[in-house]
Image (cartoon, rainbow, N blue to C red; front, side):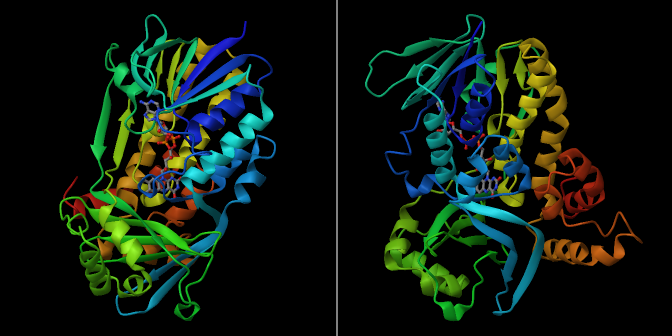
Length: 428
Ligand SMILES: Cc1cc2nc3c(=O)[nH]c(=O)nc-3n(C[C@H](O)[C@H](O)[C@H](O)COP(=O)(O)OP(=O)(O)OC[C@H]3O[C@@H](n4cnc5c(N)ncnc54)[C@H](O)[C@@H]3O)c2cc1C
C-alpha cells in the first residue's frame, strides 16, 4: 500500500528527503508543508538567508539523485580555503585539499524544489506554502496547520510524519508529550546578522575562491564569500552578551562601527547596506541534542530539528543532507519496514549528531589565542602527525568536510583538544 508521508519543513533536508522517497518506486506519496511563502515566487527577506558552504559530505547526498549535484554546482562558487585578515592589514592564507561549494541557503532550496516539481507529478507530491504546523497528534496520526487565508485550522493525516522543521521544530516539541524523551536545547554564545556587500575594488586583492574572515578580540567575526555575481555576502557573528552589533540602530552608527573596527569592510559598505544592516534583526542560534529521533513507526526528526549546531564548522546543512542519505540506506536494508527503519535511524545517527554539537561548539574556539593555536597545529600536522598523533591532528575543517570519517570518529580524534578548549573557557 502507498504510504502517505507528511514532511513539515521545506528546507534543504525536507525537500531532499522528498526526492529520495519519491524515487522508491511508488511506495510513498509526499505532502510537504512550510510556514513561509514559496521562495520560487516571493523573494526571501535578506534577514532570512545567508551563504552556506557544502562539502563532499553534503554533495554526496545530492549526487544520488540524478541531476541534483550539477544543478546545485551551477549556482555555487568553488571555495578552496580561507583568508584571515589581521587587524594590521596582514593576511594569513589557508589552502584546503578539497573544495567546498558556496551558495545561498535559499537558492539551494529553490533548486531542490524546482527539480522536485519537474520530476514528479502532483499525484505524488504536493507542496503547501504558508502552512504553519501548530499541533501534532501522534496517537491519531494527525497534524494541524494554520493558513493565512483560513480562519479555521486545517488537519492532515499521515502514515509517516517527518519533522524537518528546523531548530525550533514544532514536531520535536510534541515528543515531550511522549514517554522518556530528553532533549537539550542551548543557545550558542554568538548571534548573527547577514551582511551583503557590492563587488570589492580589485585593488584590495581579495581572492575569489576563499572564505574571507576578520576577527576582533571580543570574538566578533565577519565571514564573507563571493557570490556568482561577484558581490560578497556573509554573516557577522558576535557574542550575545556584548550586544555591540545590536546597538547599531542607525546608518551612521553602522558606518562608524565598521570604519573603526573593520575598516576594510567599512570602506566598501554602501549607505544603503548600512541602513539595511541597522534594521536587520539579529538571530540567535540553537544547538539541539536529543536522545531519540523517532516515535514508534510513524514519526522521525531529521536535519536541524534533530541536531541543530553552531555554524562555526559549516556542517549543519551538510549533516542534514547526510541524514537523508543514511535514512535511504536504512530503508534499503530494512525493506521499508518503518518500525525497524525509524528506530535504526536513532541508533545510527545519535552518536554522530552529539559529536557534531561538541565539535561545532568547542572545536573552533572563539578565543583568538586558541584559534591561532588550532590553525598552527593543523598546518604542522602534515609533518608532525606521525610523531605526535594526538597533538598534531589533520585539519578539523578538512576532516568534517570530507565524509571519510563519521563525526563521532572525528570527535574521538579531537577529544583532547576539545577538553583543553573547555578547560580554558572554564566549561569543563
Ligand atoms: C549563519 C549560518 C551559517 C551557516 N552556514 C552553514 C554552512 O556553511 N554549511 C552548512 O552545512 N550549514 C550551515 N548552516 C546551517 C544550515 O543553514 C542548517 O543546518 C540547514 O539549513 C538545516 O536544514 P534543515 O532543512 O534541517 O532546516 P532549515 O533550513 O531550518 O529548514 C526548516 C524549514 O522548516 C520550516 N518551518 C519551521 N517551522 C515550521 C512550522 N511550524 N510549520 C511549517 N514549516 C516550518 C522553515 O520555514 C524552514 O523552511 C548555517 C547556519 C547559519 C545560521
